[in-house]
Length: 175
Image 1 (cartoon, helix red, strand yellow):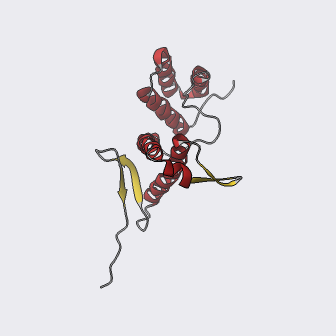
Image 2 (cartoon, rainbow, N blue to C red):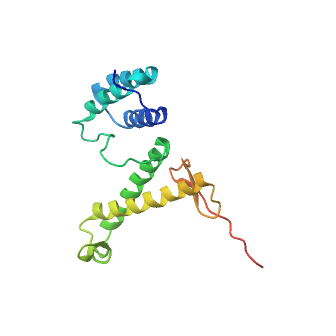
Image 3 (cartoon, helix red, strand yellow):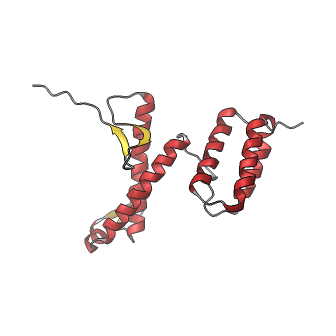
């Protein structure tokens, strides 16, 4: 018989990803069969690959599918959820900033093949800024997990106002 088992860690990450997607998106009639497949996979580890195949098939034609081809983030799902919340606000703010004055369309430039070209619109500018923010937040989280107190750290949580709880290193002042 074929091996349909899946590593516990891998299964748990996938369960977290799907349950987070269900919590944050309307999946309509898919919710019940998704939850059933997750429950069965959790209870019957010897068939997890089959249950996961069912889930991926359900998301195959969904536009905002959480299942992507290629490299996936290694961050815990809770940290990814926090980052997505922050990035949505950040993108909205940068889109509004870009639209606030024609100056931004003239001065702000994207680095590309043809040198530095103006951003075509507020959305492309915001997308670039969000990518930079994700890189920084991922680094801050890595500093936290590595216990590097000499660099800015983020434990992946948000404050009540929705901003990341960053911990900056204390600088010793010689005096």
